[in-house]
Image (cartoon, rainbow, N blue to C red; front, top):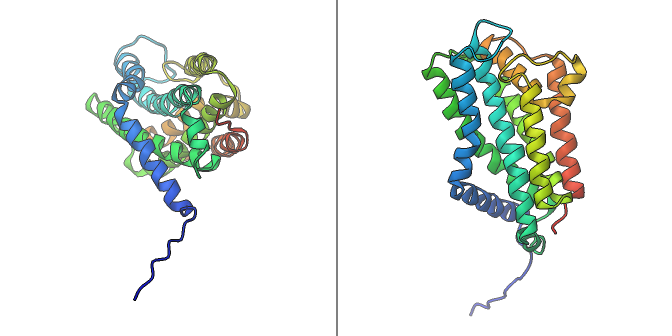
Amino acid sequence: MSTFAPAPGRAPKRAILGSQIRMELMLTARRGEAVVLAMGVPLLVLLGAGLFDVTNLPTADRLGYVVPGVLALTVMSTAFTGQAIITGYERGYGVLKRLGASPLTRPGLLIAKTTAILALIVVQVLVLALVGVAVGWRPEAGALLPAIGVTVLAAAGYTGLALLLASVLKPETTTGAATLIYVVMMSVGGIMFGAPDLGAAGWFLLPLAAHAEALRETLTHGGSIPLGIWAALLTWAIVWPAAAARNFKWE
């Protein structure tokens, strides 16, 4: 005769993390309008600055300069600006407070949100890249791996900074700060026109410019990415997620 012996206890960390990742992906899929809006500005920049002489560029290959910059801009728009605003309001509405009462840890939430953001970025970048190819951009297919590598680093850094801002500022303040940083980065990041030459330190101050330049070096020129850019994006990918995991507040 068998005896049933329930064994209550905490679910394995892998199961908890997997459940939260699925939830983040589901919520992301339901925000279809936010996905479209996140691609709106980059798409307009791609078609406007890439096809017409509306800005001065340091090269005659307009699409080769603009399309990689637009791909980098899309990563920042989704991983930083959109994530900061959404997470800020989730905290303001008490959603994160409820998650804080669950077995989910702060690093677990960070990993789940970063994973969902990376999945969304894959779709957005693929769509914009196809639009670029359709209008005449011809990327170097052999340079995809380093381009993917710097994109993952940039997305991780942006997500970490977004979660940090959303946890220490009020939702309205987070929206304003994230939008301001986005506008400044886009203005001086070398997306629609040449970026100012700030030297190696510029890559650490302007990750959007570093990411855009890395994609141009690989996808447009088929070259290698400067070590300074790798160092800058790696620093962002380590420092900001670590700061967010340590200082994130559920309410």
